[in-house]
Image (cartoon, rainbow, N blue to C red):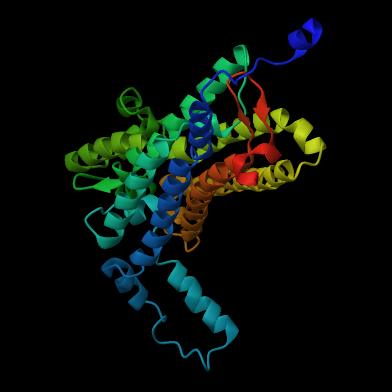
Amino acid sequence: ERGRAASSPPSTTSRPPSDLMLETSEADWAWVPLYGGSWLCFSAIMLTRQMYKLSPGFRKRLRNTRFFEVNTAEASEAEMASVMLDAFRCYPATVSEMVEDSASAHGMVFRALMVTGGLAATGTRLGQLSAPASGGFALLLGTVHALRTFSICSVVGFSFAPSGGPDYDVSQLRDELAASPRSAKLQRGSRHLRDTVPWIGAWIDDAQLKALSDERRELLTRTAVAGMIHMVLAFLMLSVLPALELIVLLWDAHSFAPAIRACSPWALAWSALAAVRLLHIGCIAGCLNYFLFFFYSGFLNPNFASSAAFYKGFWAEFAAARMFAQLMILAAAASWFVPHYQQDGSPLLFDERPLAR
């Protein structure tokens, strides 16, 4: 009897039943802020693109194509493809340029929904959505969850840090740098800008700087600083957060390996969602690298800045932003199949969850 009592786990029956029910209920609904906030962000991205097609600037560029003139009943497939390609080129070079005008209808929709969704998602206790850890791993995992929350906060900051404003504009800076003459002797950038704004000081030499008026130089400096803030927030959202999600995903897979090997239905469902999350993380990385190729090339090469293929960078960034929201939705949905742990450390296994009964 004494040995049996020593080997059995500590009992939780001394706790009031209401406390146990409250703990289970809180854990069961911890995913709601992340799930709802991510859906708002996804709606912001998709709805903004649809609203942008009704903006005066887009409609004006579209009228300069044959989009409204082509006869769909008589046009050949090649002609239709050419017209649609011209329509796609009416989009800006980046998603940031699409949403930078917060006073427009599509800009207001983007900011309102993204800020609301971001604030809702930051209220999520992310540690409750994945497997716990002990010892040194608990500190590391807690740091990862804290960084995930911080990266989600960048969604709100990104909404208030557009790429263009009344006294700065990244798109104008890109065209200015691409069109300015570049000195053949100076290949290491401008020493005047390198110490203050290294983000752009390495790309522009003194010959280019002297070719600009004082007003354009001031615009360049303001835009370089504002653009750096904009890019850091976008980097946190589209690069750092998916990397942190990968770390959490690998930890959960390691923790749930016994249940997966036992072919528990809930564990298999979690595995299916984990595979989709891995696919999203890989696609976000691929789309972001493809976008960055066009983005940086537009600053350095005038042929790229005016290239008919420059619009491809926009669609790559748009796909990455959309998949970012989908990745967070999947992270919330995956928590439905994560076992909860009682105060004594014993898990409530997949098939013992309240939702499974």
